[in-house]
Length: 167
Length: 79
Image (cartoon, rainbow over the protein chains, first blue to last red):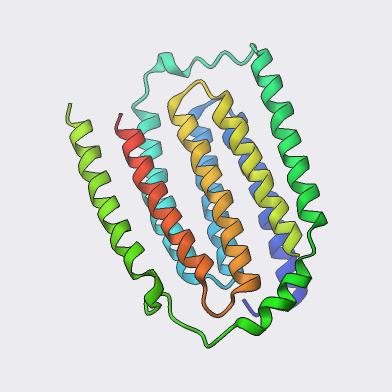
């Protein structure tokens, strides 16, 4: 979006903070309903972030599909769970949890070092000369075949889900 | 600017991996899988915004990722 730089930065920082807290909430909250609502908050914040990044179509698709369909589906699945599955024994911080947190932290630190060591502005400078005139998302003829395959995949997946759920 | 957004998506990715591995519940694992796919989508959209502002090829690929994630969440929750 063409916002003034300071408003843009302020919105990015606030969205980033909400995303960080929401991500922690999805993983660490014990009650699965709270976790599902935290996931909904994360998805809405990601959609607002897409609006800030000039990707309005993907932001609308994210709101419709992720928040409107997938999050609702997850909430239904959470509410159909029995009470016995609620008993998350959180006083048992197992050895596996510790090892996984170490591995995930090391993955995160290695990704941060890779990101900070890459010279992004050299890549921007070299790709600036390759941009041609702006095209619509649907009029681009390169992606015609993947669109058809995606629609067939969605059809097959929905039929399969209905067939599995009927039993 | 670009690095901060990439660090944010890397953070969501690692949080998603941690939640996916340590979840004892299948619905929680599916929620963390959605987190993973969204982190990847943020990466695609950011690169598309910075490098490919005219043709939006990264945006188109992230639409595919959203559709595949929707299909997989529907099948995973039908069980």
